[in-house]
Image (cartoon, rainbow, N blue to C red; front, side, top):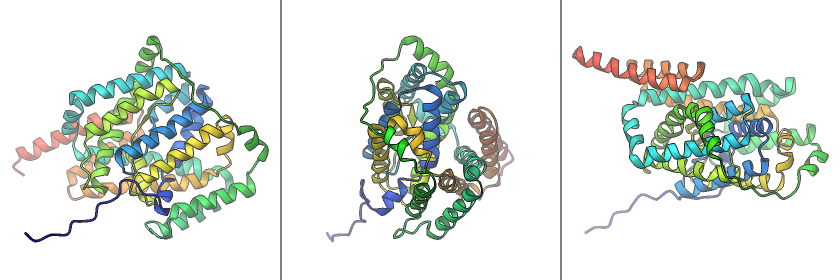
Length: 387
């Protein structure tokens, strides 16, 4: 029997300049959320940062793919807006971990995945892209005035010229530009010195009352976004970029659950996977879990050695540069609409869902329900007409 050459297998973990560049692909989303969470809730910054870093390491090793971990966005928005204390955050995180575990082990998550069609998933991604782009252009890019606009323009030009270049990864030059700007215009050695010091996460046992309160206040509003973006949309992006790795929604929901069953006991903020983070890492060059390990290492260093002045230290990094990284993450997500453009009905559903998700309170729940209903109604009518 003749021997046949097999296709080369992509390594699970690799460390090179492209993985390092990809590691910065989700920084513009995560940093501002973590700063806002710590400031609003008074939670221990060392616990939040160290556990966030450890969850990145867990995800990178488990999947061997650029599958980073993000703070739960609806959770974070409610915590920042209402200044919800840490004990309820931990209770809510444990509640959503238990809920996602039940969906995973019972197989209910598979039934939901079959019910929700691909155009709705693409619409959810488009809605997230609209929100990220709005945040980048409205809040981040104008943050430093005229100098910030010039900095953002330079970062944008570098990214356009080098995006996709495996030899000279764009994100490394953009981040280097931001660091150089910070060293010249924003560095405060006194703040950095006050922040230095070794700190470990603190142990915490959520009380029953806090679990119930957190489930109602925080977990329930989060579930539609998690179902749509963290699980279904993430699975779709994995299929788009890594078709040789058939990862299921049950696997994604299982690791989502595991992280949130551990995080609350060590003061960590609840986390998820996310299509935006995956798209951001991939867009800037990452192809293995190495980028996620490097990203996790950054937060471990910040949490273990610089956590007490975290909010002050990270603010020396210019927001306009984060805005450019965030904008390209948004564009990568929006570009995924291209595979529903061949069908007018599918494109209409995707655009409708995206506008609902991006523009309404509880938009992800509304978009998920309305989009699924509209899709199935249009399909029945289309079949009934004999088309």
